[in-house]
Length: 138
Image 1 (cartoon, one colour):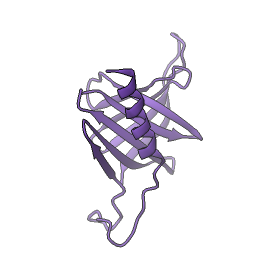
Image 2 (cartoon, one colour):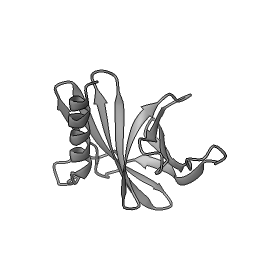
Image 3 (cartoon, one colour):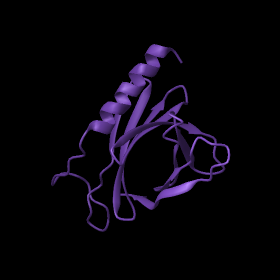
Image 4 (spheres, helix red, strand yellow):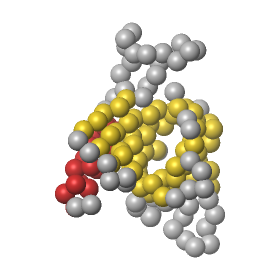
């Protein structure tokens, strides 16, 4: 992928992540009456989706996903005041996104509408630490 396309793709992803998901009376509702907070934006050769997750312990996590026509996928996740840009990697099941910045070392693993956020220090002897668990898309 050309460097220009990569920069444009990340710009779209960051823009999508920065948007506030607005809830009004016209928003669709889940069967339990709660608002659906997923927002989808599409362009030529790309598709972006923002998903809000509720996680344990009582935390809301907003994730913007960017899927390119080339098959590459990225995510932008805002956690504890830091924006982490991630790229999809192979996983046994579901989707595993790993931070592009090794110093942040976040891992976001999703399967269906569930997710878990982990931290893995940039050290070959480190073990993963769970930061947020039982994340469910709302």
